[in-house]
Length: 182
Image 1 (cartoon, rainbow, N blue to C red):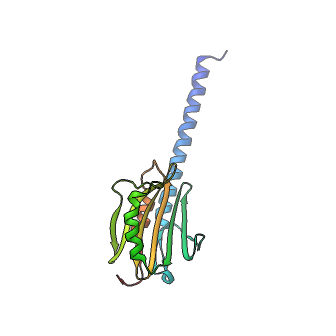
Image 2 (image 1 turned 45 degrees about the horizontal axis):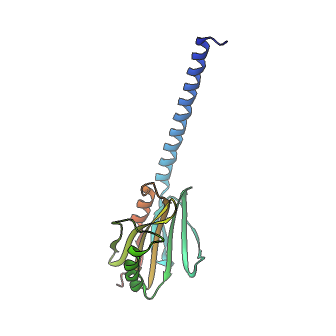
Image 3 (image 1 turned 60 degrees about the vertical axis):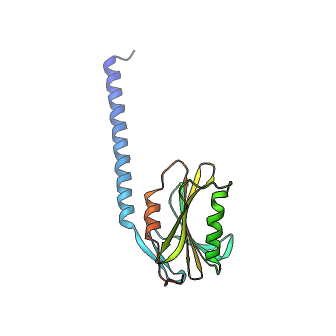
């Protein structure tokens, strides 16, 4: 039988190991957070008329659902995805108007109450909203019309989590490189 003194020493050793592991994990996360903050830079896309700040460069590809739309995608975390869709849409203002009317009625992707807002960037009209997209997931989106272009900036993430600070920073950094035509 193991004496109480030996048991106490083993317990203390286990607690010290757990403390060291916790401390090391916290330190690594803090270093990663600091690195991510330092590594942010502005990415400019003159062809599509916008710039955005992000922790890394995006994957750029045609949108699989609309060949005339370019898709910029970031995966900064396992559970979160950010995308910018850019395409020519002659009737962008009409689409914004229809979307504003239809979003509150959508039962497949319910709108988060109070999230639908009219917005603008450099005089270019837009919408901002949040919807539940699938079980346990949500999307936060900003849409803009600038000239004949439509821009959709979207962040997808877990439903139960607040909007990530990375999303807010990326969304707020979005800028047009073209003049206002609306």
